[in-house]
Length: 531
Image (cartoon, rainbow, N blue to C red; front, side):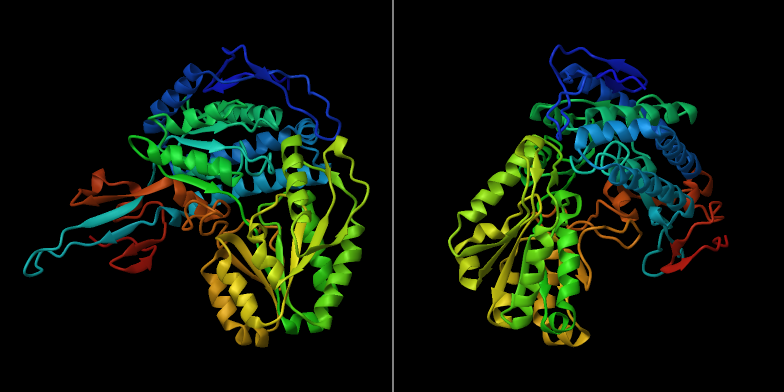
């Protein structure tokens, strides 16, 4: 497939701007050959207007039609084969197995949403039957379900070029909900974005869907993203990235004449708490898993464990010694792009300049010319953490600090000072959980996912998963960006009162022609309503 660097606006291409940029191979510094055009204001307007025009038609498609659409896209992405993997590797520095795994996650979650559409419970259909003889006033017939909100803007994430990008969870869940999508391609991997977008559009044509159900906008400047969020036809937006970038877009979404929901997943320090029982039983094993989690994907995961807390003891010292040798043995690797690498270097330099911290270990041999990052692990005590509150902030990369606490009360003190985070991890025994109940209850108020005897990286894409958390981890702690519930970001409840059967959506008709689970007078059932 030949890349053009154009905007993909519905079923046509456009390259109006003379301003272009190129992707860079982060491992070599080489500019990749395609020139990508910065989107103009007119092109952004056209894409959003086309999405708005497609919405009334697309929202009327059946769940089965949308399920087939998602399955068709997944097949088209797989059919790209090595071509897609090669461009993704070149643009991101990811090794091939990572690219293959991420492609599998993307296609797998699309097929999972197809099944979820057919199952039907996502519409949350509710029926309250009338009681015309009720006194003092009759009860009307009231029914409700979820419907897609309208055109959605999705921002591709830098660290997941396939699974959280053009065909990632944001796009898939919005399309499943019946919402047209306009994706803002990430400038770090614009070729990957274009390649996937082209097969997505081919799938849309094959399925007979209206033009405008999907568009791709390229752009390297902040103005492009802001214009998409501010466009009056945008009804919601989703973003995965930095706190600074997410907050700027969130503020723009809130400042519109008609504000819209902006779902951002942003910074997170993902604390780990090592409780005494676990350290006595398996400090070596915990250290191995921690280093693997810390260095997975060169530490470029939003769930990377950035702070570790444990009680001063011989077992904690043994854990630190194990981490020292294991982290030093992990070879440095190339980060996604020069900007992320520079931020990592600045973050490490900042920590090294703090009083009261000591470097436990770092891997040797990182080549800055290849944007390589080496694992860095620091240690400090309670006084060091109190005097360096910046340690509560995320450094994106394989960097973590182990905090040596004197008492359980100090652990609770530091847990209370944590900002909102995506995850918190506890390693312990059941007895530890009982003894540290206060700590657990504090963490329940701070995070979206509590992990016991595991590690935060490696998110399971499933119905129960919640990938979000209190601010600044996310702008809306109620919602997840991974798992089937992420569809709830792009729907709203619509209630019908007193409507005839013939005019109701199939999901709310007495006969229940789709056979979905519904709440009828407060009871969950698939049975039809007897008229």
